[in-house]
Image (cartoon, rainbow, N blue to C red; front, side):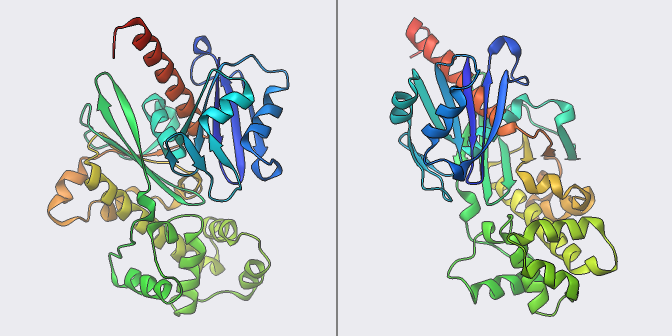
Length: 340
């Protein structure tokens, strides 16, 4: 029995997996509001105190970098340590991995109906795979082929400098530089970035803001869902929201292409996170691939790269579980002397 967790600043998903039940069928799954708990161990202890199977090991994908077995979530006052968690929860082993790393471990196990293909391409067997996931922030990771399986690698590439690709995006960069010391891709290609693009289009006169929409946004705790819902619904007063999402998807496509070049992900690119699922009507394959492949001499190479949207709602949990399965298998092989 293995406990898997997808730990975020807003919510935490926990599930228990058994190898014989299959990786797509957790025995128990539950969602918690992260902010209601003083620590991860308090949250997990409550989960395990219920009518759950006994577990000995756990893997937690966390929204932030993991360094030497410790991690801290950006939007929570939680500091996590593998050894401390194992001791407090009375577990034999606990692994902390980056949340995008967890998604990466889930990618090879996704079923065909858990993907929406933007570009079928020509995948290279054993080629590197890229994962880019705009949600609250922008996560990036990649996978490399090691012996007989894919190994996920974490990254903080979403915090790299934003590189505009046309005159309008140059204007966006200047607009944000006037207000911030640093403009990363996360500032324009995430749930936080959507209101920034909207404000730029409004303030610089590229689109008009209807009075009713201005009022809704003024009183909203989070303007992003309103902008997305208005754009998807369409209508006469949705132009500024639709322009916002078109610009957003152009930036996402360009950065997915950048990531592809950096890790040479000829095995494919996978779009994860909550934002792409909500923007499926705006992910027009021809338009997306136009921005994705616009890389000068490497355009032809990028045309052959498969691009998919991940539809699986719990790919982070799935990947955390598969990391645990691989780590346990490796431990047993090492103990048997078959590998060192």
